[in-house]
Image (cartoon, rainbow, N blue to C red; front, side, top):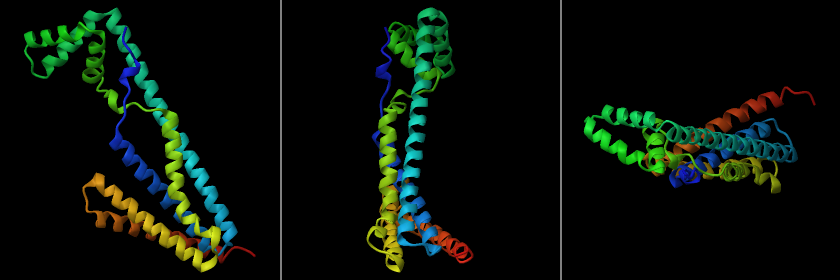
Length: 235
């Protein structure tokens, strides 16, 4: 009997990249939100409330989206496994011919293709693995992971980034809170940009400064928009 569970795995590099990008999204989106409200000259309490709402809404949406994504991938992969298991057991000659055609299509001669196919089809687990990889182009190592772990991780990482621009409004108000929020956010953006450089191959300084530049530009634009809207709102 083929063991379905063994076909799930994970990737540490992908997880780290997702962590950096998740925290970056949370920080940048909530930084922009907080600055837009601050530009409208609202009270520190209102800014704090808005930032907290943005943090929770963004983190929950990210967590739910990640759960759906991972769970859907797992269900699709499990269905592919079940279908291939059924076909290997029910019509092994057809599945064997599919492998033969695949190997010959890659340039192996008929005798070599037949020998490889015979070897693969002699073991149901190896036959399943060959069909998943060679016929369906599915890599079991990239489709694993718990959807709940992914959801909670995404929630926590986005929240960790989103709390940075909000934190100063717990203790400060007015210009001091705005300046400290911008400074902490810029520092966080630089750190995350530097982390992203690990995957892009760009220099740490260039990636960090680019992240800061884009973040401050976005925050400055929404601050101005918030200010323009705030000055035109009644009372």
